Length: 388
Image 1 (cartoon, rainbow, N blue to C red):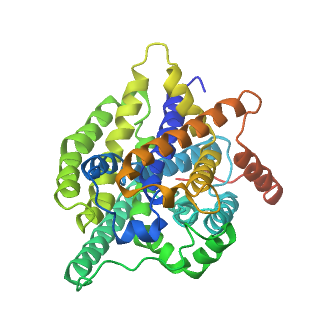
Image 2: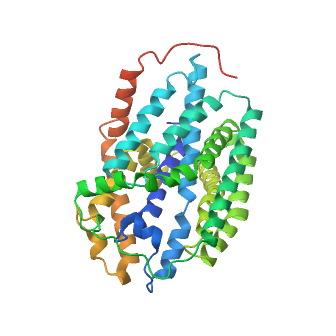
Image 3: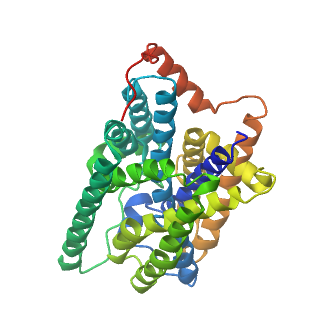
């Protein structure tokens, strides 16, 4: 962990994990959960503040997390190639375990799980990574083009669809506020296709961003010598994409512009965040993370555990099977309450990670995952010719 590359990598993972909660927390604190969040947010005097807070996180950290998964794949491939091991070799076992984690996480905890989609994407991209850089660039362009077309068609369909004459009907019964933990499990299973639509919608984007992450890592975006590349990404993310993102989200909050920003400009802003954090740590003279970076790095080192834990804590605070605060918070107090709940959740996650790493070197979910992987793939060290 003395390498600047790996130092910034863990910090970036921590930022991505806690950043995704910045979007998801508004779903948790809505009285009708994801269904209510999708059908509309009640107006209040705090609405402008909510728009700004959601603008800061909407899609940016989902994009960053996706790119970080691609960088993680590149790291695994580099390690395998340097050791003379086969690639993707036993990686499909890793993808299968991640898919299992995602299924369990989706069914038992949250309907907006990303692990299932990442597992399938990673499995495909692992094989694409043995192709030439030129082929990978073509795949990135093709996947991005398909993504743009799909998002464009969905946007047109939503824009031209007849608008409902009245507000959406409240969930009755409401499993988020009144149901038990098991009621929510059954609700997710009954509506599994609806809750997995985003994974299908962004599948081409995920392919592209995984490969972009791998290519950026190979190009040295996290290395001291990657300053020119980072400057270009910062300009693209903050100088070009961010202003457009702001116009989209402020100009048409909660409308079709949300699709264009979350799945269009936000991933480009994520590249700017990646480059800015990497630049910061390559310029640190002592090559240490500092207090804040250290806490983020700990969250990043146990990214899977942190992701599961933050969703568990947020669910326990907001849903009816726990404290049930989402249904009890008055509409006019929802925004400050959401900020408070978010602060509590990240404090719990960061404290847990810090305490855990004082005794252990791997997060609990990571330990279980690694133990399962070694049991299922004991021959992971078979050798083969290096990939191209």
